[in-house]
Length: 216
Image (tube, rainbow, N blue to C red):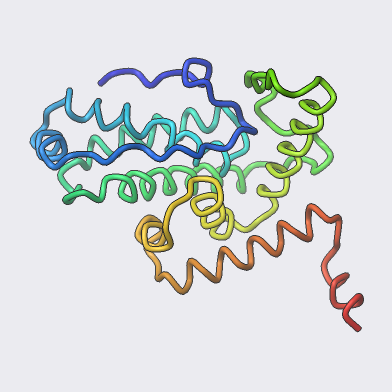
């Protein structure tokens, strides 16, 4: 199996959102991969690697952990390639990646928690590439805002974080998110709504119950 590209070669940074969805995978490629064609599977990996890595990065908040989860997700996908059906490659891969992230988050829960005041993990990740159209002050401000959003994402419950990332970062439709998370569209919409509200409160610096006091 071809080795996954590194974060550096993918050009992805922990605070940069991914907006380009991978192109559709044709049925012949899927059929060949299901029959054990390694080259066909590697083509599927190449088409979806950014998508999967970015999901893991947003869920875990750490570049090295996201890279490990991405690697594990594609290895698991290869081992279970015969369960892939039709043109549902993207939600199938995202569901596997979500499971890899959930496993890592459970392992973390069994380890001593990091202080909320500690810097985010992944300090060895490459910085964002500067925007030639923006001055240094504007670029620094954008970097701070992205870091705040990522920090706020990490405060969400896992299911809400996943739904928000898949919708607002990856740009998936509700139906695809429901398939990836193995739940109903109604549940997906509810998780997104609650996650967005908690993000808004977190970014506004509100504490639990504070909104209720304001509404009295």
